[in-house]
Length: 290
Image (spheres, helix red, strand yellow):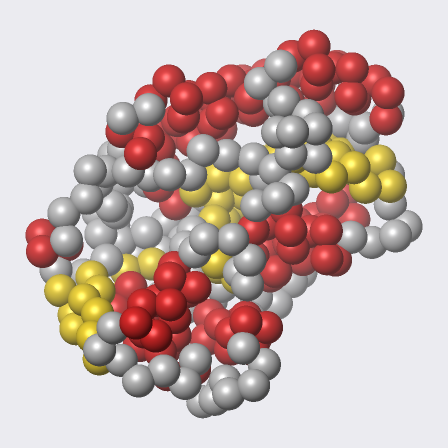
């Protein structure tokens, strides 16, 4: 199959490049080679390369900044997916679109199921929710995959930030009343390729959730990062009120993974197991792995 990957320089796009199956023809693009907000450019690219699958890893993900840049967030998170969906419909291609836990309200007590009503609480969450809606309305073949707390050995992410802070500070304060689950970008990339390989060119319109297994707070996550990374830095638990942000964060955003496990027959690694592997990539020497 001819597979287009947008946003290839981001965390997920980078992982997809690492595991790209040579039995497919891969086209890795970013904004400098394909502007997915340009309808004419997208159509020309699909036509020239006979694209059969588009994995859209491009997104506006600066959660707080989106509150000040709603138009730009909307352009990238709403209108670009709409263009991709319309183009996929025209070319009978499959769109694999990445969404987020932020489409939910964050006030649940049990993991959010795919079918649960959405209730975004921020500009970022609202634009991602509207992007989903546009894809569904257009009616192309699609997999929409919601994920959360994405990290990897490349780019900017929470894991790398905490490791860097631990090298420069004696102690750090981390929110302990927001619960979710981290996602290693490598594991998500593997799951996406599995979905694509299993589906082929069959008609499909499905929404899935994918994170690593388990549920923890940001404080729990940081303790593990510090320990596995072999750092010596005190971590202090604080409340959300003690760390105000421009955009509201979900207090609870654990996603129910049962649908994708059943549909694709995949085993999803525990969050700690994947964190160990990621930190080993960042620092092969000295990682404890305990």
